[in-house]
Length: 405
Image 1 (cartoon, rainbow, N blue to C red):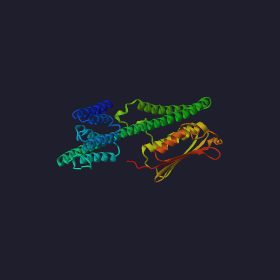
Image 2 (image 1 turned 45 degrees about the vertical axis):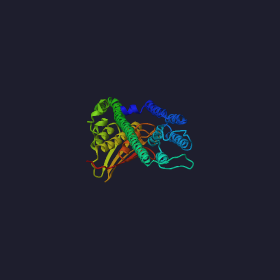
Image 3 (image 1 turned 90 degrees about the horizontal axis):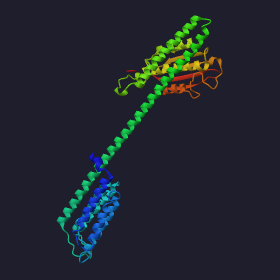
Image 4 (image 1 turned 90 degrees about the vertical axis):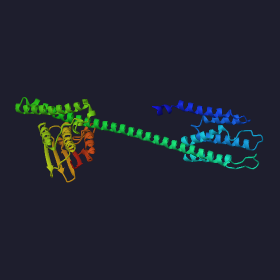
């Protein structure tokens, strides 16, 4: 609190005016002809010592030199030398050391003061000067005092720069923390958006097709209609559970940090075993789905298993949306030593590839392809999707196998 108060601009101005007033007051003790002019000019110059420290140092040093020459070369003396108002030179030096940025300004100011002490008290007598003798004790006294003031100002400068650097680091750390928080929030929103899209898009696609099929089957095959209604109910319940989890996360107080990573985005824990359930529901909706697993199944982390599950689910959803019932879909999972390869191929129900992708779900601006690509990139894998030659669509993804704890 005190430091903030001392940093107020009007406090600095008041302090500089007080120093100038002290120097001006000291001038009143000297009655030579030019003491008042030089002393008052020094005092007024010190008011600007913070804004132009090196300029003020040059002006004050020049006035001190004029004062010395008037006291040395005139008879009677036109100024007192030394005089009490010469403390302005030390004040100007301190201002340079503490406020000037270049270090050479700091050393130059100290050297100028020591040179003045040597000329005034070191026994240096310029040609033509009126009796000016040296005073070794005064030289040592004023030289030591000036050096002590310079060193003290250097300590203050170092302290000021250290505090400024710490404040800059703290401000940088705060900005980085806020940036990371924003990134984390954006990533979480994107993940929740992907979950909502996957839940809603897949569920609605299956339910709509099943409802259409049940409507047609009611008149011809009651058993098939009942099976379709059961599929609709089961799919709706799963989707409703997923929605409840997501809404719970959005409403919950996240400050405790007690959720597991899966719960953080309201996702339902799934495994590769659930792929058969998804494939079966797609078959019930009218697709001809073949699921093939090649190689020894690796133990994937939960997040990677969810990625594989959502890729297959989204691909089937888009086949239902764009190709419709009757399309043939081949899902291939190949487990290599260091990667999992996912390939989903459909024949587009025999239709030539048009403007809308059969399995892309976003080539025309939707969210499916974007969400699939984001999921794979988050896992450090690669993703490609595009139309096949002739009819249908193909999705390929590769995920690196990461060791689980």
